[in-house]
Image 1 (cartoon, rainbow, N blue to C red):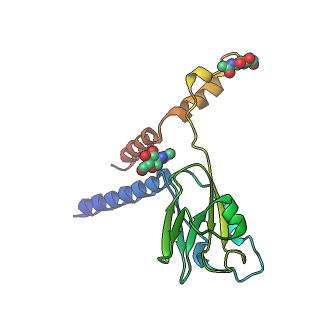
Image 2: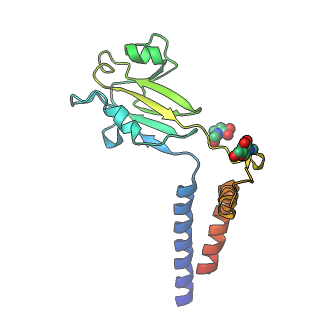
Length: 177
Ligand SMILES: *[C@@H]1O[C@H](CO)[C@@H](O)[C@H](O)[C@H]1NC(C)=O
Ligand SMILES: *[C@@H]1O[C@H](CO)[C@@H](O)[C@H](O)[C@H]1NC(C)=O
């Protein structure tokens, strides 16, 4: 009986570790705009509250941004329309109260509220999505200055994260079983 109990404890522990690690290695991240306040007309005089929020984050391709709001809307517009706080034909429009937008390319995304006056009063945001990291190609390596430490680091970076994950899981399995 006792060993059976121990066995299931280990199983649960391993499952927990497994899902925690999966979170660390997961490819895309969902960001909740404005954190727990959501996408609302800023109550303060701070007109750049959402840009300050965005500047603290690192957005990568295929990450998503989630907007939660009531009686408002989310528009993705051009650079010029963002400056004017107005768009007749937005690139993207949603007003369902819970909008998930996928950042599907590198570069800049311009978000504004569609409610009259809200964008002007600070409900606007620019998100910059980073260029994808390309794995170093062996052809570009410069052997003249290459030390063994450098080439080792390059080798590590080239290993796909799935292989690192597999390695970690087999190590954990060895520890716990
Ligand atoms: C983003 O997602 C699309 C579709 O799911 C996929 O084809 C593409 O490879 C992904 N891009 C990156 C950089 O993960
Ligand atoms: C290697 O370095 C030399 C000088 O440091 C440079 O001229 C050359 O273009 C580099 N080669 C590559 C492939 O980066």
